[in-house]
Length: 404
Ligand SMILES: [Ca+2]
Ligand SMILES: [Ca+2]
Image 1: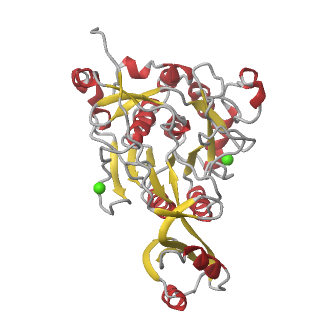
Image 2: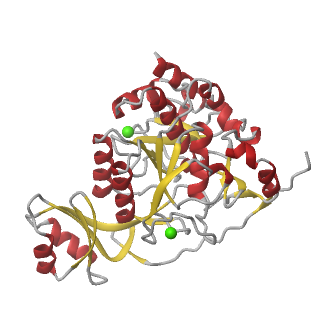
Image 3: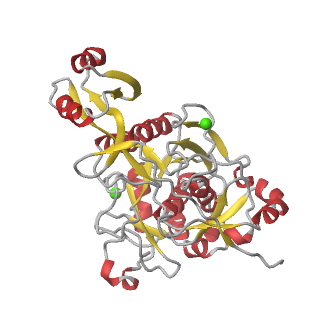
């Protein structure tokens, strides 16, 4: 094989200041608040009381309101005290859970030719060994598991930066939606630090469960930032459009009632939410991975040692490889990327394998299989024993358990 040269794509991290910051230093979108109404309450009467406007219905009982910039926190307080309101919160802004603040995506600039030569294999769903035999896939026993299950027709919603036109995705998607630009085309856009994050995640779902289907829901712009309102809407959409799994490779450092409600809605309808622990190297997980009903995923390296950036905590459910994952990038390239973001799709893929064996599996059954089948890695990171979850996922063990 021709010697490949790798170069680092320097991604400009554009810290666009388009929000305000509250007392807890959590940024939020200026001029917007979320409100959940109690049954029988009238949204128009409510907003008239406070001089606000209805910007959008977000699903279930939740609305996005428009308000004067600077009045968001006061409005949330007032609404929270109103008898016709269940809860109200700021439209928090949050990032995808990669580690681009210290390690950029390593893009194989030579991979275009490589991909072109392999297009037929991609189309047939037979991914090349450079992808299928990478350390993370060997670690989780993906190939062995795929002899027994493929994830056939299981829809995985990827709430992220959208998707790219990559050969890996040919015949592997179902219609998605773009909640950022409000259109039916969830294509990612080049130019930002978060570009192709969603495509990288989607590729890893497919490497783990080759016959699953990706529903790309774009709730993060290419700078890698999204708002709770768009994410909430995307999660409700995923559940209502037949996704069985929701991949949440993002995290918020404060509790969001909206995200709680979206996770509970999904869970109550048999849809498992899988979420990233986050990359702050802190003893607490990000939301929504901290949510009980969501599956919280920590990250390990190729030796099953805790990834230095991964958060940890007793609420973690399982861990998965999170360092130097090799997957789709842009329109036909491949890249290495690190972060708990990339551990999550491996677990979504594992869950898709299980669902293709037990299509009627409930969320509790899925969680039970996924948390009963991992390899115990406590001895390898003794300082974090019981804080990385039940162990590092093992797809073969999980599939065997599902076949019993
Ligand atoms: Ca679009
Ligand atoms: Ca949990």
